[in-house]
Image 1 (cartoon, rainbow, N blue to C red):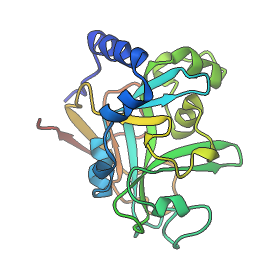
Image 2: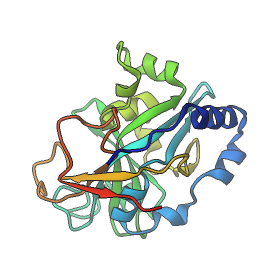
Image 3: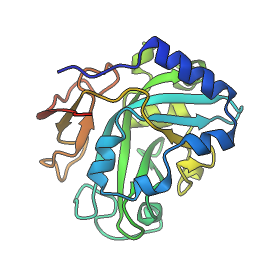
Image 4: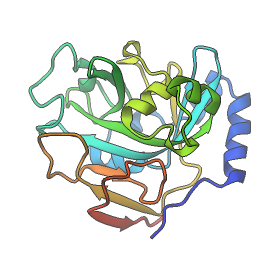
Amino acid sequence: MHSVQVTTKNAETLAEWLAAADDASLRRRSIQREWFERDTITVARELLGTILVRRSATRKILAARIVETEAYLPDDPASHSWSGMTARNRAMFASGGCLYVYQIYGVHRCVNIVTDREGIGAAVLLRAAEPLMGIEEMVARRGRNLPRERLLSGPANLARCFGFELDDNGCSCCGEGTWILPPVVQPSAIGISPRIGITRGKELLLRFFEPNSPAISAHRRATVLEPVVH
């Protein structure tokens, strides 16, 4: 079973629209906050194929198709919300559609989308995406000569290329310079596996990805492969 890639025609059509879109147009087309206020696993799965869009500090549009996510739940020992609300994880307890941005290793950022109702403490980590627009700026931020499909592989790389900073923590992903647009092309299959780089909750199958995308984490194959019925 193969994942469906964005065709050149679809990507060009989207790029043309994005190039001409103002913030109001992006807000109207973006997925609305209520969509994120649902069950976290459902949102993590259905984020695959959606388009992450961000307006950079230079007013340029950056866009990529999300191909890998991980769900973090309130009763999940690997989740930042496991021990309750703190100053660091406060944004994770907001209502769905809020960004939860945190720092790892004192250097890298990771970006999550908060899910479910206010006070729950659940979110979806964006692990990888396929770049569609603003690639020159993404390359400049990585500072390395990498294949295009590997630019946004891994959560820290994705956050860096899109310019997410700690100041974005608590902001909306339905505006305020960040938007999630509906899929141009839906995935035809979803890979499911344990999450990557955690020490607790390792047995939970909460990582979701497009199996044949060149952007996903290469060292972890699917434990389960599900066809998607449209």
